[in-house]
Image (cartoon, rainbow, N blue to C red; front, side, top):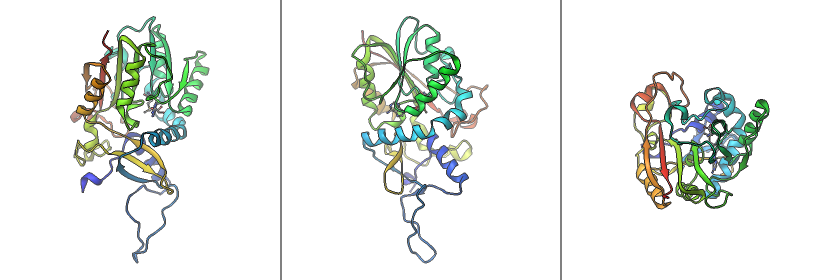
Length: 309
Ligand SMILES: C[S@@+](CC[C@H](N)C(=O)[O-])C[C@H]1O[C@@H](n2cnc3c(N)ncnc32)[C@H](O)[C@@H]1O
């Protein structure tokens, strides 16, 4: 059944490609049998891929490990596209300098969540903001520190889960994330509640993530990626488990309806929902995001919300 077929995701696709290069493939949750019907042991480094609900704490643990292990590769692969001091909202390549979603930041307190190597934070610091870059993964923050050292500057870095921010209430004027926390947590509502808590009244939240419609389609850049295989309303997470059954990676996904409900429940006012089109000047494929798919489907959704004054 199509609904039981896990679709690849941006990060998972990368680990699949690495495994394929080694001649091994992820297996779905079914027994592998030899020609005589006897079950075969699963190679240790081949994860079981399935769609299933995930526990919040387990997802945090798994994704911290995955991003720690893949931080250097992520930067090698995408660092040039992202730029070391640019805020790029997604694989379409739209920059904050083009979309202007954050509003004025000079002299304001700004928090980036799921900051990775803190490129976006460096951009807003360059505009005169007092910025803190936070991320779950020490590996990603180490990449941030390496960039800072090379540039002879330093963005303040904090390691934390975006759903448990270690900041006092009403500490920031702007909170933002570009493909950071939201795709990876079991409960996106917990992130919006935390963002609302640390924002000052009147403060703004901008959050970019994969567009929910993407989950219907295989995460491949070509024509195969244009045929829906999974119901839009199937909210089960994409999961990978190792040979011992431990969760090693999880990506979760909302419907638009569920995200709006989370934003409203957090007491935020939704001001904009953006679905940026693929720009003609970006020829670059990033996992399943490509100029071809970008012609037909939105790849990124960006939520702009405000804590009421
Ligand atoms: C696709 S990268 C995006 C990084 C950066 N914003 C960019 O555009 O390159 C996803 C980031 O989210 C972080 N992340 C995953 N789960 C998180 C969580 N629960 N809280 C905060 N950050 C998380 C990862 O460590 C990783 O740095």
